[in-house]
Length: 196
Ligand code: FES
Ligand code: FES
Image (cartoon, rainbow, N blue to C red; front, side):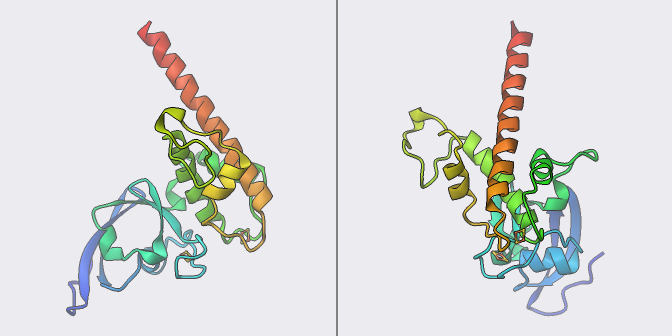
């Protein structure tokens, strides 16, 4: 049970993080990043620049990626927050996590949780047909562009890596995206088979 707010600058809020509800009292100026790290001990989400420049603090908010250092914790109430700690399921790493591991998509690892959360969203954004700044044909009827290395670099450009592990990061995102497409095609084919 969170203590009641003690000043006009505090509020009691309930955050839904990785499917768990946490009630806490926060100063209204507390960022989602600080609430996750300092209050909930979810230190997987990293603080790099603390001003929206590096992407180290990327989390998913209602499934969309966002930088937690520019979100107020009070504004995240009632929304589903997913951090890197919430991606694995049933003891199995998320396919994006596994691809980063298999392809050494990191060196020191500090940017990696943000890279992985961002990549999860990139793959979903691409599958949904969202164009990027390097997409040639943005007409809706053109469908999703091929997820080339240039597309991945552009879509992941908000996540900086001081170790410059970019080559492996792009490979990991590409592999995870291909696996997601194959799984989706398999599901669709199985569904069509059942319907036949
Ligand atoms: S710590 Fe949030 S973008 Fe750098
Ligand atoms: S792996 Fe070190 S900053 Fe990216």
